Length: 238
Length: 293
Image (cartoon, rainbow over all chains, first blue to last red; front, side, top):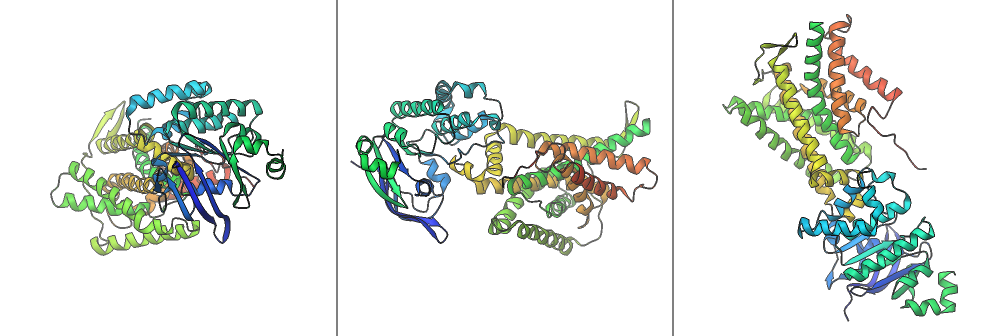
């Protein structure tokens, strides 16, 4: 089985500081994979490398095609939606303008986009209500919803989510994760999920990787990792 | 009363000119957090292009849009060739680069066209028309009309089109915009092109009043700074409102405050800059800048 996204021995860092020391992982078509690990293990850096935010060695392939030397805006154009750390909301713009930016590169016509608008508004009714307000007026949870809705409108084949639960109330997190799962199943969109909340991430995903100082320390089926006492205690901290 | 009204209308006309150049400054400030000190000189050079065209028998109303297109392309070229290599440099470097650019453009214009002031044609007659009891020149009305149309077009482009949306996005949040597929670097270049074209409008509008020569824009740019600072340097709407306020204020001050006259009008603009920076540094429409420590 060839994976949708493949990382092979990826090494990179910021300036002289190396962060990833050879990370290999794979996300299958339509699958949900979680990437776990402590602060500073290199989770966010891995995502940034995938979307061209920094230079890397090794190989990253998406749908069989190398992403080497591609610019971020073009990588995004081939079907990867990256919801970055801090959500990447454009607070100077309205909610609607944020959503429009998500869909602005699509070429499948206004009717299809409108249909998807209706769908994301069904997932997140609050965004329809706040449509014409400045995005800066949204609460943290609503901003996270906006970021995910915007990513959905990009019609991606793969979604990279960087800590969607950060700073949100548990109930909000639950509902957001539910919607991500629904979207994954309905549209067959693969998800690479970076999370601090390991318990939740393992529940969601089929496979999981645990990073430790820039290397994959453990990998396996999520159900297995969840059941493995020693992995849980030494890496996941619950 | 009648004279007062006339002063206001001609203040609005100069305000339109200031507003155009101020808007050019704001467009670039939004895109790069930088005041482009070469904006006035670029406008002056564009005006010389319009002058050359008209001088060779091209109709004014053809020369005008052609010049805007050339200025637009020129702005993009300047961004690609001069600014892009130093894009990530410290702000002081960028400031020096735009100052150098100003000197360069000024020198080039002087070298090619000389420093003899030339009269630039206005398509509007200098005759006056009675408007609600005030005698207003067609020239002032023309300037007001042209500035209004240009500013309106820019507004519609930025607020109502997808390309305008991506330009605003790229200016405010380059990193997040890239992740949404926005070609940030090209949007910045587009911003420079647009600013250069809007600036050119101000140059072409002011040339019939001031006489065209390489140093023509050096006072106008001060008024434009005043307008942009007054409006809040980040706000396009602020630039327009600021431009009108500065235009009217300076005109009224020149007419009614005896010691100001025609000589100290520039000092009024400088006083506006200082007052705004001291009392309300974010201007009328600017947002207070918050910095996390």
